Amino acid sequence: MKTSRRRLTRALAGAMLATLAVLLAPAGANAVTGAASCGITWGSLPKTGTGAGDVTSIRAGRHDCYDRVVFDGQAGFNEVRYVTQVTTDGAGTPVPLLGGAFLQVSMRTPSTSPLFHGPYPNARGFQTLRQVAGAGGFEGYESFGIGVRARLPFRVFVVDANGPSPRLVVDIAHTW
Image (cartoon, rainbow, N blue to C red; front, side):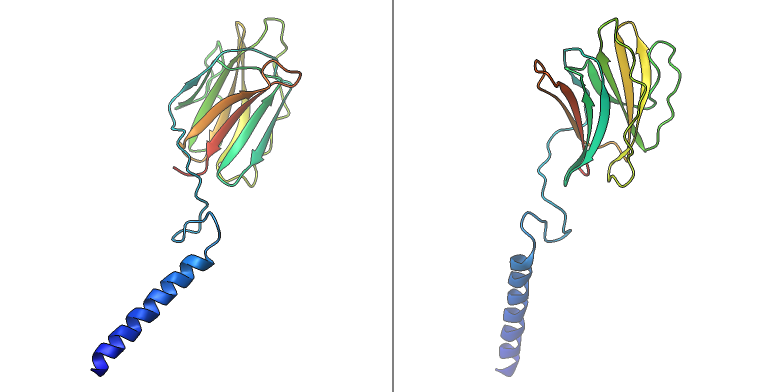
């Protein structure tokens, strides 16, 4: 009888501890890892689009579930995809980038557009983003390389395409 009471007491104590752990976990967090539950379903395949513009600045931001690169002045893009090596438009010269994986961002620009030569955002302290660099331009296209920690899901979209402040946004997830 004493043995079954002990087992019951231990089982109840374990259940109470498990319940307490769930109740004290932060909202939106995974109780096992403590990571935010992001629900990202973007994938890592190439993204294609339309539109053109002049890159006037590039900035980056950190978010709970992803790092963001914003190309101000750009109202569209041709393609964003993972490549083994980012290369310059036209010549095909390798662009050195920090990171374990690389996104090449190709965008259409008006033929009279000056190429964007910086400054590029500082990626210090970012979870996924490592570096952004120019890859030059050729025949109405301008390209950029984004160095990231690893090949992770990303999404691409344009904000205010027909407005006074168009911008191309590339979000790279922190995890799968």
